[in-house]
Length: 183
Length: 260
Image (cartoon, rainbow over the protein chains, first blue to last red):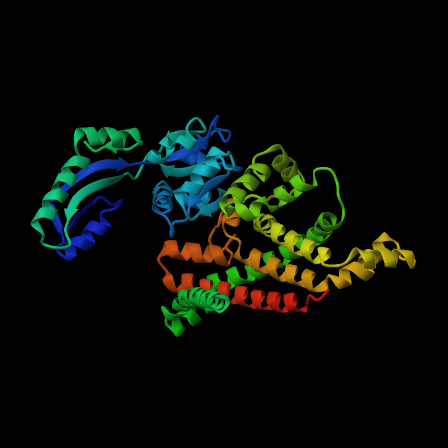
């Protein structure tokens, strides 16, 4: 028996099908917010999503097949009817989101779409600026109790852990690392 | 006592060889043959394979072009700062490829040098040229080590005799030393090619690792692990192992032929 808090609900749904997951203990925990990240000083003069389509702007995105942020970024751009224009400006699709952070922090590209919480990482501090996306697609990170065996003692521990990671003191830690709590 | 130690060391050698063999073998064991075949024929794999051979060939040529004089200089001449030079050239062997990639990114990216290169139309970051540059710096130290060792294996006396018989310095190098170090040079070329084909970290950071653009075999492996496509990932792994196997076998043959 264990308690998990994955990035997506998919894992829970899979557990749900196998009846390993107690729906009544599910809570929405924090928000996972995509933002536009630009190097310090904003050399590409990016103000909003439309600016990513400007001629000559160098954009880096996550590979939509390899990482969640890539998939979400493409969705956001398609929803804003900008995908076909922005696609021409994308000079690299990276397999991981961490690479995007490196490329922004070292000014290799003008803009990238990354998770807001990544920007709190020490390496990015003072090296990047973020711009909120409108309209945005925001993911919520839930917590829930799942179980693999019917062991009462372990369930109790899982419930305690579930309570702990959604407690006020834990939410402060989440906030410290850039996650906004769900309201 | 001596026999006991002999048995002990041979036993240990066979044990570890067995473990490595089983580890590699399990890679061949997991996918179905038809899965490997379809992966091999896929557009992505063919692209990656072609790009790997193309970039690694050019990188190998460049590395060899530089490694021969560098190896010779280190083997034959003493100059100021030689020990330090040797240490710095060898450094990339010891530190992670990712660090090398990051250093190259900072050097060739949005830097004064990168801007000058950009002005004359040379783009290294996120391009195929970036793959070659990353492979070059990953493989160079190995090539320098091997060429240097093979030049050291050629006695200076041959060169001295050659000079007394009328060849100048350059002629001596091309007609005496180089042919005598031939096996070492071939070994160096083979290892360089294998190292270039297998270069990953530096290529990922400097060239980006974009699907069907800067995608070489190790990137295909990595991308397909992220895609959850195990068949493709393992197939690229198998190709990489075959390349290494052929390379190491040729290297061993060259080593045996190296009688000075």
